[in-house]
Image 1 (cartoon, rainbow, N blue to C red):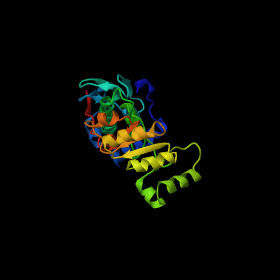
Image 2: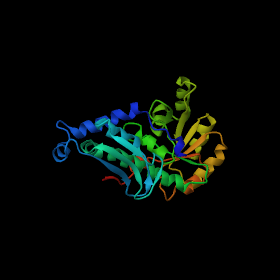
Image 3: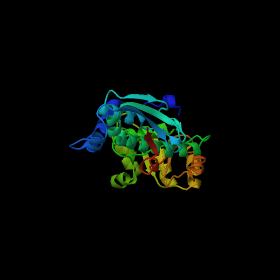
Image 4: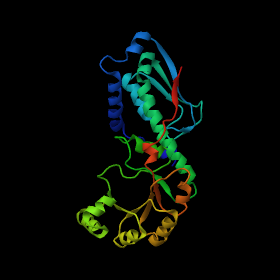
Length: 282
């Protein structure tokens, strides 16, 4: 996905998360270390730097953190979210009150480092399947808020549903509780508006055949072997969107993509991503 096509979430959605983090960090007395060690009129410039290779995400949250502490801080951005990073790259320079900069530092780096880790982990899978028809998509295995979903897009991935209310995803427990695939799809179709898509999870090719006959929009192929994924693609013949899921890694994602599935979902790109090493340097 082109960096130019990545639109950050609205500040109205991100600001409350960043504000809450700052409120927690500042506590009752504020940044007593910076207040006691730095003169109130001390000014300077620090650089936000990449210390490891990766993909940037969360700069918008970092900017909000600095400006919440001091709206007068000046931020000169060199690399935007979605940009590839090499060690030593200058991402941005922040100028103004040194007290304010150091007070916001940890919250800003927490957001940018974690979200860049998500983007970097996503990009590794996206790069691994280059040239196939498949897309890498995330899951709902995220922390609250939209920022990890945004970071996935910065890494070249795409988003699955954002919550329980924007699409129907019928899992194995729904099927068991409703009395089978036919029963659960009948109930959903009877009460669902025409604008909402329906996805159903299947574990076997027999279940896939039943779901296809009943007109599911998307079918999640859960922990199937690559041979079964290829058979599923042939059976589907383009009728439904096929999503492969389960134990996806950088080592096996290419083979999964080459079966011909449309999407490959991974919870690990959000719940197990390692924070990217970023730092503030004078």
